[in-house]
Length: 263
Image (tube, rainbow, N blue to C red; front, side):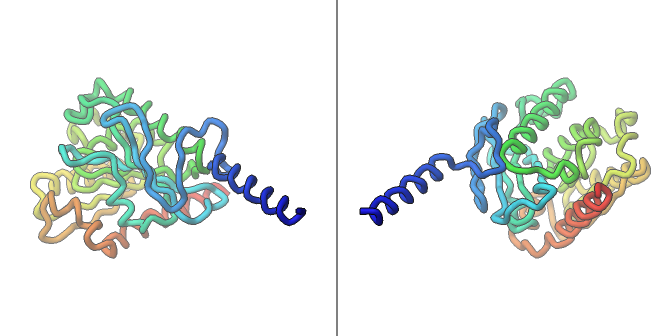
């Protein structure tokens, strides 16, 4: 009888743990049911009404997970996803957030009148994620391809103190010759540019934006993708993940450096 009681107790405890679901580090305000080592979809108001989150299979480091917020490009076939950054990281080490846009007008036109709302949307998503997993606040990155890259230039320039760096893929700075006063705060901010050499006009925008930010004191790195146009550029890392070694190394170095500075 005692053996049976012990077995029943263990079954009940296991069931309670499954119901609880949340790890020890998730606080009561956690509204996302994240799964370690999985990519999951979660409701968040905005275009398409959801975001995607990839949690590494490894436990979080003491400082928390570095996190990359990725903004997708403008296309009827593109929705919140983490495909590019998942290929670069292999799904390890970094918590990845495939963002949606708060307003469709900003998504399609990058209208500055909606910028404040988009900034609040990013900050809301960050806080919701941080309620469910430990986040390294010194290692929060913005990344985007095409329209997503132009979008993060607008958001990032307004929140330089909150981010560790920006990753522009197949894109550059929005309004490269306008609103220059807003870019002055980027001095020392790490930026990574990657674009296809046959990607017209986005390669030109990437090069000129990299030069502009560099002149303003940003810490700029850039790689060119040979014989690659805009469509092929989107799958540059996805089809051959080994190509992402340079970007992954760039991310790792910034995370390590920021951690040393904070100690």
